[in-house]
Length: 101
Image (cartoon, rainbow, N blue to C red; front, side):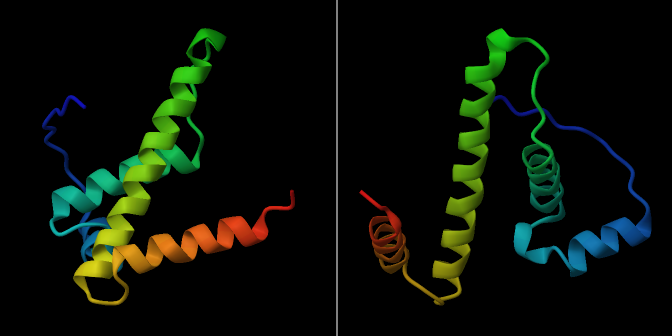
């Protein structure tokens, strides 16, 4: 992924919200703002207009979702709430018991 540095200005109340209420989105203001933008794009299902980009767009969505889930799992593990191995086992159990074959 290519990164680009941007200089932005945000109102103080927006920064306060990012730092106080959304602290769990990253360790720094920059990470939190980046994750807010990524999450917003993902949640709003931003898609290119052309049909030829549809598969690529879904691939990007899946990568963003994977990044978001991995970040949460890392945070839970760092805070010693649940080890990633146990989390993965629970997910597999839920998936396999939820499948109707």
